[in-house]
Length: 309
Image (cartoon, rainbow, N blue to C red; front, side, top):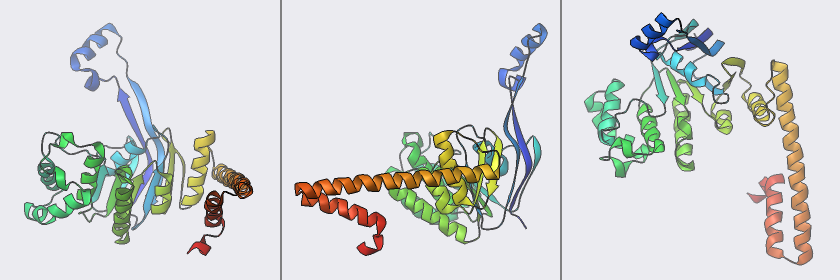
């Protein structure tokens, strides 16, 4: 049985209604005959299903409808059309929401734990591990509002990792922190997924999507460009799209973009190899042995890396 099913889902925002402009302004505009509302469809006709242990990567430029879709799957908002079915408990981690900026890091850790349904005793047992993972040992009594966005997200991720949900939803949180923390959080995600948890990851890091995900969804301005288990194909096509702004309208179009990216890489690689060879030749001619060795090692590392092991 599928853990998450999104069936022909569309999500609409209405701007200018009395909820957003206030009742007084609504009445005045209504009496003057100037009252209008505008509809904006953040997502249109999105469909996919995920099984236990799947990790879905959602790609798309800003305004593609990624975060709105995550909110609907998390239960924060209802889809305007279509149905979403989620089996079991869902843990949603969208940046640093759910914290009180006036409270300290320690107080917020316990507050967030309580919001997720953990007992005080459980949080007492896990508190040190949470702070250590988030690398906030020296900030425990500091007001949350004084933390950087990266620190806030590290704390949120660390707390979320305590849970054992059926589905885990992550919105850009694996991109916070320095390289070491990103590597650590990625490894933690792999451990969670190995237990059979179903995940959804939104990230602008294509490398991260390729490494962690076995399924991929491409959105553009609320429209589903494609859904597939061929993550490498979609990632390559998306990278070509970012360079050319040529949006595919079919699976064949996606394959063509991916092939174009592959050819572009091969040409760039050949050009780079030619430049390195010319520089190596020049260094040898000038008798610059240090530069020649460095260039030769770079060429061997790229062409025959096994020789350096």
